[in-house]
Length: 509
Ligand SMILES: [Zn+2]
Image (tube, rainbow, N blue to C red):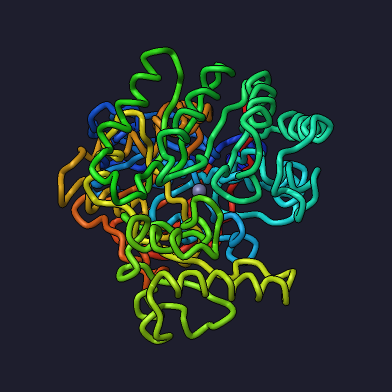
């Protein structure tokens, strides 16, 4: 007996050394079991488990825990791919709030930025990711207005560009495309791009198409010239042959409310002719933008135009000025209430507010975000029909504050449109937040629960999922989003952000 002790000790030492050597190779796995798996493809949910190793999904199905594996009991909740927000303005908040709770509390794990023609150069995004880890993934388009401003000068964009300027813009776009930009985004309704010619947009779009990029657009008009603006984006799809997406589709002219079926028909006809046109949509009947979009002809001192705006383009009684630097006390009040306070008609007040904001900008040239309006402009039935269109995916168009969509767009769809109104099934809704979006944007290895895909996941309770953010409390957290993973790491659980920052920069592939 006593002779064996050294042998046993030796064996223990050897086995310990083997363990030490093999440990770094042994990847820690996590099993999420006892869940209904909604894989994002639009197929119905299946009971099972999902195993994660590192940042990837490595097994799906009827799995039992491995020795030493960490196990999460999903308690019969639904496990879905992380939501992809195809139109986000959240990026600006992430340096200060890297946890990205505005996004993760509603299940968003990837945001697509560079929207409405406004982008950071890919170089600066690459640099950002080296310096500032964040919780969510980011992909970006290259913004047309940003190109214009760089080439033509910020205060010199209110005109058509020259051939030489277009060539310079193409050069900048090409640099960005080479560094992984998703394609070209335009914000043609905004003044920085409004005066551009269709030829200019087409020239840039063709370059994006050559690189297998895509086109996404806040179109030239969402109200009185909506049909012309839709024709323009369809044409860009036709000429370039690349997929085009109409951003935050809406009908903002009261005279055209109820015409969502006609608009959808226009898009379907284009699709039938081979144009790959899709749209994204957020689930609210009010937008958030500058007061200036209410003047389609950009004639801000024309009383007739102001009267058209207050009667047809938004409801002054239900539209709240969310921000107003020249007179901060106006923030939080409706345009009608401010008009009453000023003893003016709502049309006069609208013109005065724009003038005050312009004067403020002249006095404070570096000031940004001087005013913003939550404009009640759409009707619910149109919003519902756009959400239901089979080629529309869900977006937030949100930021971390302001319009409630920044914290609650996705959970609002799941609570209001799926559970309460049953306008679409949970399966369809999740597809419109994940697999469909990834497919339409050309994002690989995300948007689906599949082996080899990145482990961007959401554990949600369909019985309690809901948004709670309002205009008054834009940062109220959603309920029912129980756990969120980005690249295999838990970034949100128990209504709180964790300290994990696993987000990555996604490049076009
Ligand atoms: Zn927009």
